[in-house]
Image (cartoon, rainbow, N blue to C red; front, side, top):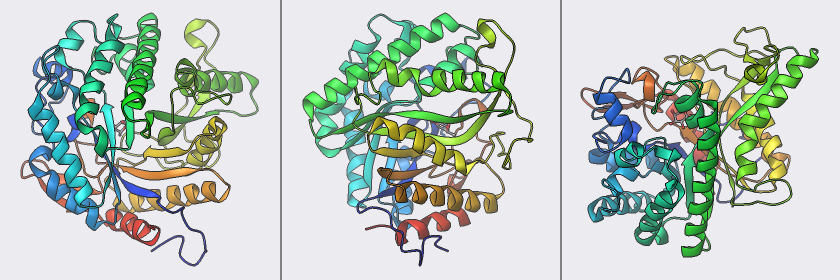
Length: 415
Ligand code: FCB
């Protein structure tokens, strides 16, 4: 079924359709990074092990993407493979990613390349991670090496994946390396450092490749007051929205007055957050997320307890339209065992996207999270976000019906 057939509505020429993955979640054997170390030390609940063994299977994985009508694919380069020891760059690893990019191009898949997706080289983490004084320089040096080899074959770059999520999980919730809880001062410092690293990487890429399109991937959470008639809930939702969806953009100089260090806006959209006033004082300013299903248009909840709320994508696109830059939906998806729900999820979100385009919002593409089930960080392999199911012991991939729902949409709207 194609929700747009017969409506006369079309996605713009060159619209990019595809799926996304990240190195540590699919590659397997990423033994030079901090996550792997924490996994081995038993400080994280699940080990990534062989993950999806993607480095041995990327060709058939990309065949699968091509056969689904995709014309784009997002993946990440694992910094710790490129620079396993400080200042030592691996030509073999660079060649590996050059082959991956060539394999995508051979199949007509436009690469969207993330330079850092949550994991850090162990040596960098041991020296303080993003808190290191030289963090931005070290990151920029790595980016320069990547660009020198891979620059000419890539147009779309994402410097850092979801800085706010990284800071929240690593420094506030204590769920991800470096496992710090409630470290608000450290969190603020790291967010600033990530912004510096993004700007440094942006400058390196643009200096070497002026026509490149560079962004970071922002996790865009649509904030609403739990009770829209309650002023204190509205205040808390506004504060949370500012911190979550605003601060990083300010730090990199992007606002309605100018793009700062951005050529486009990479947005990962999954859900909304309904915010309740949580009392006064610094710890309560951001309110509390309300998970009761009593909000207007409440949607079903996924297996990781995220509400399905397609309208939120429209709201988010409208919100970020104020930056006057093209927008790229760099992730959108659902963890569920109920594939019928995933089918509906895809149709509803694509419908909202089409409406936004009809309303004049400049959207470059839509990437589904994820191409296949993978290692979902501290939740292990239980949440299933894939268009393809993966049986990890045998590494057999099986396309879900939702894969063909998206495939039909891609094929009908490619041009
Ligand atoms: C995003 C991450 C991605 C994956 C999805 C489910 O926040 O970028 O790696 O974990 O969530």
